[in-house]
Amino acid sequence: MASKTILDADAVVRALQGAFARGAARAELLQIVASRLHAAGGPYTGVYLYMLHGDDLVLEIFEGRPTHHTRIRVGSGICGQAVAERRDINVPDVARADGYLACSLETKSELVVLIRRRDEILGQIDIDSDTTNGFDAAEEAAVRTVADALAVFL
Ligand code: SME
View (cartoon, rainbow, N blue to C red):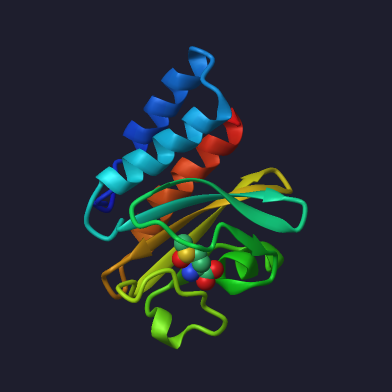
């Protein structure tokens, strides 16, 4: 039986497919992801699309609270660690995370899912949650489905 997730990943993928089919530009595709994930509610408090430009992650689109972390060096913060270690990072409690860069004092947990095309890392979907342990394995998998689809259309 499929696990129930807050995010309807298939609906987001369909929206991306539709936008891609009518020639949507990169910014619109990123906006669809940020808007749809944020609109899912629940743990999706802030959704940040950081794209890799050389050794920097650059914030291109977000929904939710603004952040002053608009450029993050690879290796820095949870976001930069994910790229340096080439892995998704799910932090159930940011108060216990080494190297965490705070965006808001309200944030309790964070999920970073890489946007990859084969071996190339294009960027990441970074989600802040005001809920501790905001993202279980099924929710993380749903975000990964969206990230993998986005990588195809970018
Ligand atoms: N918390 C992130 C920084 C990005 S903001 O949360 C949007 C980090 O530790 O890299």
